[in-house]
Amino acid sequence: MPHNNRYPKWERLCNVRSIATLFETGESCFNFPLKIYFIKNSLSHNRVLITVPKRGHKRAVDRNLLKRRIKESWRVIDKEAVSVHGMDLALVYIGTTIADYHKIFKSLSDGLEKIKERSA
Image (tube, rainbow, N blue to C red; front, side, top):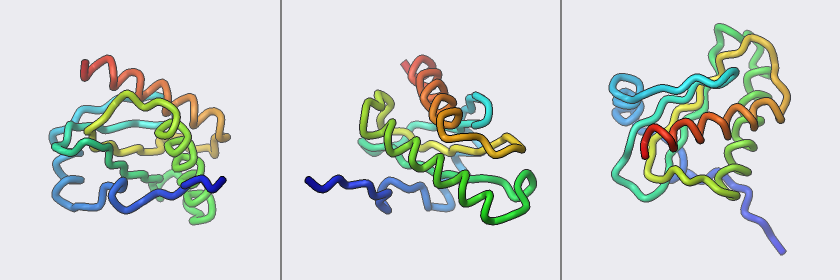
């Protein structure tokens, strides 16, 4: 029984204008170690941008590890029960230490609950 664990192109936020709009006019929600920027889009699905600033983590290996953990958390949450649909989201890792998967997962799920409350 194959599982689709991909992060498809249509689920990523890539458009430069959409990203600029998200950071300029979107709202934000802070839940350590993630800061989540969000704005409504005209689509029926979410688009996600995942960033880990070079300022906090100089080594690319560390940044890639954190991005993989955030992507996996998003994949699990998205498959289980994301009740927030039609949003552009930017998940920015704010912490200066490398957090474990469970901390990132909890931060992301709590942040999405806050977004759900605000957008309702």
